[in-house]
Image 1 (tube, rainbow, N blue to C red):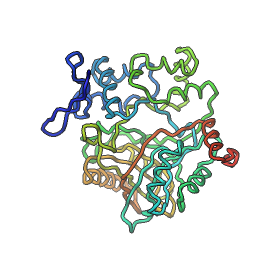
Image 2 (tube, rainbow, N blue to C red):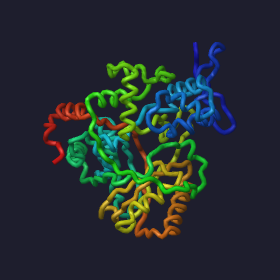
Image 3 (tube, rainbow, N blue to C red):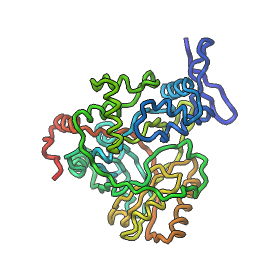
Image 4 (cartoon, rainbow, N blue to C red):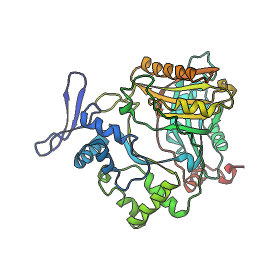
Length: 397
């Protein structure tokens, strides 16, 4: 019988899976050198659709294919990796927004639980804090919300407000996307100010129409992988699920990639809660705010988005509640001072490039839950009916 064995190392417990003579232990810690090489690629360096994404990870990491399969399965089973899946560019499949919620303090965690567990159309759910004297500090709950095509994000949020007892909310759709990735492992040792030579791309969300066949493939693609599905023919079972020959499934998926609705093949680490070893991938996450002059949002976003430390960067209109902030970005790190050093480097870069900032702030993340948002109109209508809500009442005007 295999058992879970933990062996103490000088700085951290090296967690292992499988400790019998027949099956040598497989390291599942993020500190293991082979795991790190795999994760540096697999977190967010496999863009678009790949016929064999596991093979691509092996190629780019320089780790032999069987070892990649073994390590990914072990890390997934141990909870080091919380999910492995093909991501979609949901901003091109459904209307969405970042939403800040003002919730009575005594209802804050109940509202968090509702968004996390009862609303499949809310993705990132985070309780954030800022200096109480700063604008918007009373908006403690932050979520991403997707409304399937044809439905209203604002109306959906009104439904959530009534269900959670929130006082009010601010909907902030993305006007441009400058950075969208994860890559916590490869970002851990970045020095403040590390940036690309080129300006970040400014991508405008553009919702596209899909055929019924394409939706069948999308729904099969996006579901997270089970450990046994991590192999060279990763899409074989998904093609069966979509009731399509594998060749047709792959052809449709490639077409979806050309339509720019495919994101990346990604391994998501449990980057907020402790891992089985007790390690944390990150300890601090911060949402940076900058207010720049009207007309300079794209230029500012492209300059800010050059910085390698950012996992997300958007142009969003936050309104007077937040002193008219227009650029938002997310940074994760092990030390709070290091996170602030990265922000200082970005602030200095904006000054050097002649982009004035009238206001800036940091909202620190605390309790959080991250899950993929459901984007299927069929699922949405069923969810509304189950709550006694007429789906037609939430159609976008």
